[in-house]
Length: 369
Ligand SMILES: Nc1ncnc2c1ncn2[C@@H]1O[C@H](COP(=O)(O)OP(=O)(O)O)[C@@H](O)[C@H]1O
Ligand SMILES: [Mg+2]
Image 1 (cartoon, rainbow, N blue to C red):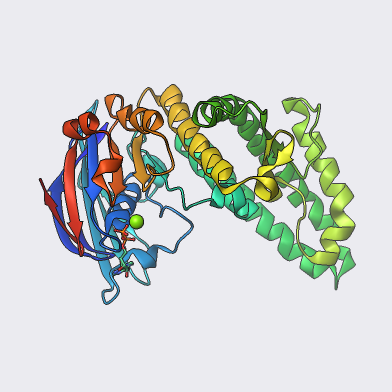
Image 2 (cartoon, rainbow, N blue to C red):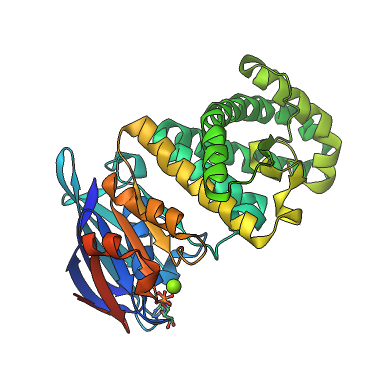
């Protein structure tokens, strides 16, 4: 699967752009603040239909405009798939695939996926727990659309329960109504937990493997799923019971705060290097390497489930790495399409560069040489 053509109108600093891409390596080259990252972001948005970070979609529309348009033509094993997105400030985005408007994300061609890595973006390691959950949920949803539906239902049940908790403070007789929501939360939440566990069991070893490859650090890297529901030793079948009992236990605090304190919506991931939490004790280099390793694990995982490698987007990622690893990173083009930005072409080994297509980006316009 690769992106063969793109057209952008009023997307960030691109007024209008239309171009083709190589199915291997594509290099976006130019000075700072010209639009290199913006173009990667456009590709990510076309693939994953979400902004790279938890940015607001409106931010993607060019400053003085109210609408933006993106179109991508992907080449897939089942033929060309063309996808259009219309962003309209103050309205929901519209997505069309092969000329049909799609209401649900899950109806879209599911094998189109992009992985974005920027060494400046340490949100996965240093950001709030919600950012790690977002990463996890986005990826699982892509691979198991059913999971997305459970998440949506869970979040509906959760807001109902929270509303009830707030009312409970004034009116104790509502306590009996809580039971129904607890049951729903436990049922949906345990499916979410179970799916996350099964998924992480595959993801974690990959992260460790890549971390070792990129760092050559002999210290043990560990990743833990920090659950607000006591899980250690609990078999997946017993998640529901564990969750119910956690809800019962936290009821007094929940009523006090008007908010459900336990459940997958409060869980987090913890990364440990040599037993120390990387969030607080890791050097910036270690945090970057971890974040890169997680992205590579995501890519590999996607391949293992779908048989298709996602598109790889590398934003200024080369300066950190030695030549051997740079080469390895870019030669990903043998297995998937790669887009890389750089202000310095000499960061790319000459023989690798020769095989790629170079685009010069200047003030929201593009020229290829
Ligand atoms: N919504 C937007 N509309 C117009 N210009 C934007 C928008 N968002 C960012 N920009 C501009 O894009 C430029 C940065 O582009 P970027 O892709 O980050 O550059 P770089 O080439 O350094 O990666 C800045 O000049 C910024 O003002
Ligand atoms: Mg940039």
